[in-house]
Image (tube, rainbow, N blue to C red; front, side, top):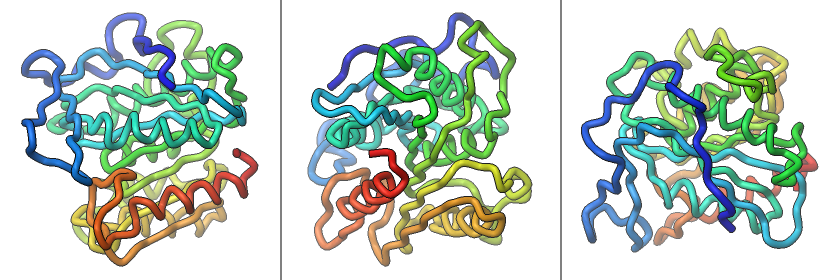
Length: 279
């Protein structure tokens, strides 16, 4: 259940503003680009990042998750990979925080840096309000889809190293997620489908646990998940990887005909969270 929303930053965005071309708006056209028979809200021109707070109405586990919707660093699939995910997490007793991170940043280099700053700030804001929102500070994870999966993954790979200078006292808190869930993450591989060297260099044995879900026929190659998982396991970071034969890309949790992955990955994720004592 949505409780409130708040601005991420007290002033100017560190790392630079996104390349907006107009006011923030849903860029979807009626009846076009449906997923699972339902429309997708595609938020564009997000120049003021926000955190939207969803708290469970029933049991509360103390676990919290910051959610990073995908959208190629051009838009945010706000309901498909954001608010609908928050509602699912709430049913598991998990506090959910949908991150409206800055877009578009697709033409900036690196395109992930500004959004990852937003993710780090979001993790700190949740910890700053942990008592108010019923979150145990060391049970706070991050979850992302596609480009949002890249953002979530980069936040985890930083391992608590801040990408920006402190803006206020909130930034004295940790920005390290305690676990990361990456669903069809994008942009981790080079043209040879190997983990990009700069990301491989970030993989150390003290990273938080990772969960991956991807389809083998995804146009955004599943090697992003496979190669990062492999690198993590080489240094004994706890990690779990699920690859389905088919499923494509950009489904969130919406059921698809003859494709089990949209409803299967959440079940596997729930089992993983339970095994880790998070639900």
